[in-house]
Image (cartoon, rainbow, N blue to C red; front, side):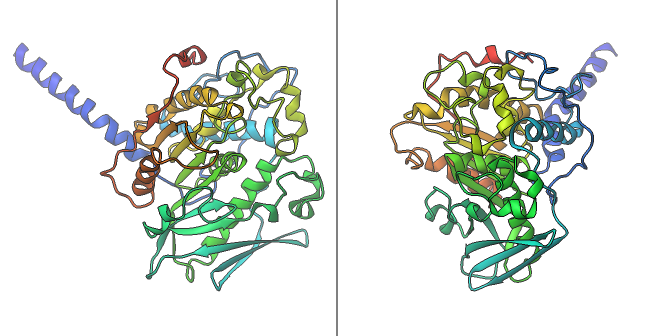
Amino acid sequence: MRTNYYSSAAILLWIIWFNVMPVRAQEAPLVYDAENSVAPFKVSLPSFEELPVIETLPDPFAWSDGSGRSTRFADWGRRRMEIGAEIQHYEIGRKPERPDSITAVYVNDTLKVRITVNGETLTLTSHVILPEGEGPFPAVIGIGRGSGSLSPDLFTSRDIAQISFNFTEVMAWQQKRGEEPINRLYPELIHMGAYSAWSWGVSRLIDGLELVRDVLPVDLSHLAITGCSFAGKMALYAAAFDERIALTIAQESGGGGAAAWRVSETLGEVETLARTSHVWFMEKMFRFSEAVNKLPFDHHELMAMVAPRALLCLGNPDYEWLADESGYVSCKAAQRVWESFGITDRFGFSIVADHGHCMLPDVQRPEVEAFLDRFLLSDTSVNTNVEVHPYPDTDYQRWISW
């Protein structure tokens, strides 16, 4: 009897162990059908003076009010909304909600989305490249052009539609505060950083795609976004704040993107918080220039906000300013979130030298292709466990105390 008891228990444990990863992965959707899957709620946002010093990277699973932590996927929606509230409050400014008045038309390969607030209208104009056939087609939103900084053939060869996001129609690359198109709609948000404004613009573009789905055959459950450098940061913020984006490819996003502000402080001539563009962020963020360790979050958590959806971060260590060693540490910290939910194949990073800025080298192309095939074309046979970097001696674990 005793032998049979332990055999049965062992079999039971084996069954539980064998099934825990698939079950957890099944609980984590690849994408959502709403901009925010969790309704807004009150978040603890202390004043600058009240914020505690956190020397290492903050715990992405710890509740903002200090009441504990949770690695349960069922709690992640609320936790990622807390992180988002902190990023908006201390770094980029409030991203406006979806307004009631949005219309869209699709004519002659051009999508026009008109957003009206307080009697003022802003129009987004996107060129669309559709594959031949009836569709619906998976699609990529490229910042600046339909494919971003990636080669268009990556998408045309896979029958993936390309949709440009013309960010200057929302806010200029070097905004003049209070004088940008979005300020006509929201004059009270003069203080907002560009990454809040641009994220709002991407979300309104997706709203437009939803409105014209009967005439523009885009598969909205397989939507990607990509950009490089400052646009790589833009892609990260847009995906962090809109859960309708299934795949994000953030190329060479540097400081303010994948790189962690805290880690960058310990490196050389890199884009630290004090050195980044003031117009991309709120002016009050720069109170942290000499006190980065008082930030209640860091950019491993910006990346983690994309979870459980797919994210591929690309780096280029030839350009010191990009702070890719910091990006590596930040990626290793963010990776813990996908690992905790049993979905490690949805997050990858590749930091590769010997190529120009925003130019995808041949060695990184298969990694991009794998993420496109897996998360836009639903090919589960490809390997998306990507972890490539030149930092074998970097002690990333000293930054992670949780």
